[in-house]
Image 1: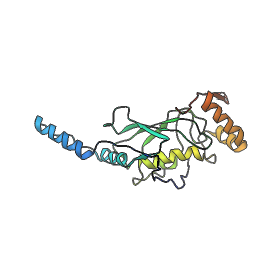
Image 2 (image 1 turned 120 degrees about the vertical axis):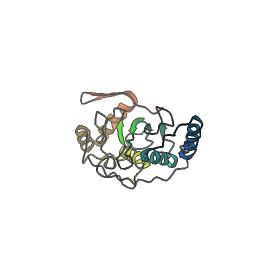
Image 3 (image 1 turned 30 degrees about the horizontal axis):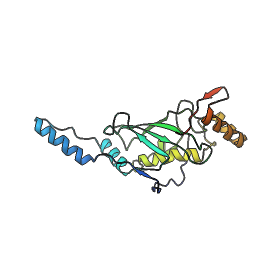
Image 4 (image 1 turned 90 degrees about the vertical axis):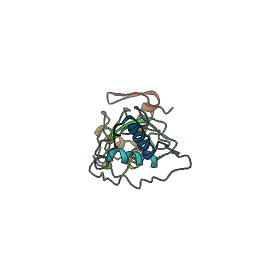
Length: 204
């Protein structure tokens, strides 16, 4: 699918939270010192690891987003982003995205899956996401911030013209008010839509 992300601004809001992570240089120095003391060679970080470190240091998340590192903050190649839309059709929901970064990053786009079952034209029932910058429009100049704010844009402005979930896209186009009602019932209480159960995903 192809969703054009329009005017994704990365400027931090007043409520933005700076993600503070360890410095690569400091870590490398510590590793080199420890390796020297042990008479061994320190492992150098790959280009992908260096770039993801830079992305994380520069990452500013608004208050309605959060980041979690399942393996600890030193393992930056796998992390989770939670988005809690504060406006639009999906307001009040909480959606978890899993990011896996390859050693080929930033030449290879991040692999991102939506782990929350959601009724959305651009996210299918397996969690695959229709976002152009995760596919054909990915460029090495883009960053993790670009992807995160692109995902946020999906909740503010779903694109039914080129969907992954065609039933959701048709419903959104034919009866937007009913679609929004179904989405909100699913978020707040859990809801069966077209025979598919969507568990509640209220923001906490």
